[in-house]
Length: 225
Image (tube, rainbow, N blue to C red; front, side, top):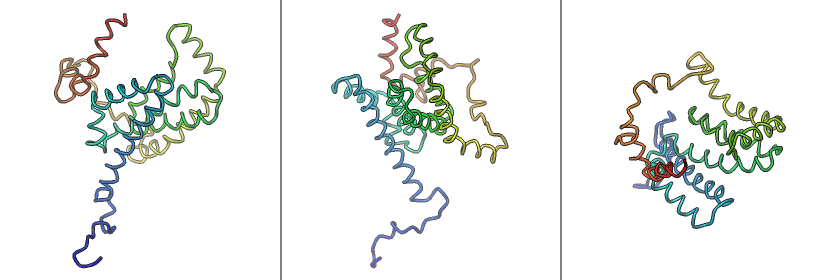
C-alpha cells in the first residue's frame, strides 16, 4: 500500500479464530441471520395476517423482547441463529402440513430441525411446533398421529436429514469428551430451588424485564380459560 495507507485489509492476522476477521465475521453473521429471521417470519405470517398486523407483531417482537439486543449487540451468541431457525420452522411446518408427502419440504424441515439442535441442544423443545401443529382437541391429536403414520417415509427422510446435520456435533463430542452424547446442562437446572421472583422480575434474567411484551400474554391467560 502507499505510504500512510491503510493496511488493516491485509490478511496478516493470526488464524486462531480470535483475530480481527474472525471476530467481525462472527458478529456480522449474527446480524445477517437476525435480519433473515425477521424476513422469514414476515413471510410465514403473510399466510394468515394483514400487513398492519404483521408490522405490529414484528415491532412488538423486536422491541418488546431481548431480540434487538441479541440481534445488534450480543450477536455472537446463539440467539440470533435460533431466531432465524425458529422463523424458518414456522414457515416450513405449515408448508409440510399442506404437502406431507413432499420430499422438498421434508428435507428442508429436517435440515432446519438439525441445525436448531446443533445451535443449542435445548432447542429440541421447539419440535413441539411440528408435532402438535393444528392440534386443538384430543381428536385432532389422533388425526395428527394418523397423518404421521401415513407419511412415515417423509418423517424417516426428515430424521435422516436431521442426523446428517447433527453428526459433526456427535463426532466432536466423542473426540473431546469420549462420548457421543454430552449433557452440557447437567448442573444448570435446580428444580428444588426455582427462584420464582428472579425468574419473572430479576434484573439479570427476569422474564418480564427482558420480555415485557409477555405481560400482555400473561394477562390473556384469564380469557384463555
